[in-house]
Amino acid sequence: MYIHWETDEGFRYQCLTNRANRTLAKLSKYTNSSVTIMKTKARLSKSLDHDATLAETFKYTHTSKESKERFANQRFVDHYESYT
Image (cartoon, rainbow, N blue to C red):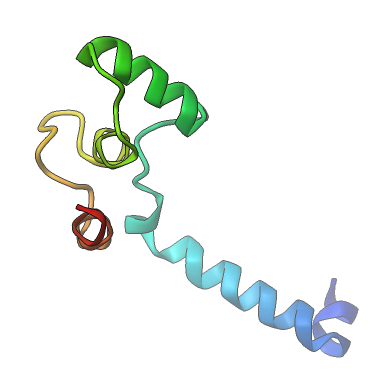
């Protein structure tokens, strides 16, 4: 690995990017585990008794479990508001 670090600029860049991303805890607050977005949309549609929109599905998966009105972080709020 040391040889790659010393000789491959792309490898070094990717390692530094990954390290920076791991320190950003807010980016890992996605609350939907490994279920696909379409499967979640289908389950949500069943519980709402109408076809859930992608905006509703996004809000459902990116808000806190305790309060379905509070998003996990500001980035999710901005993204949601840009589509509604």
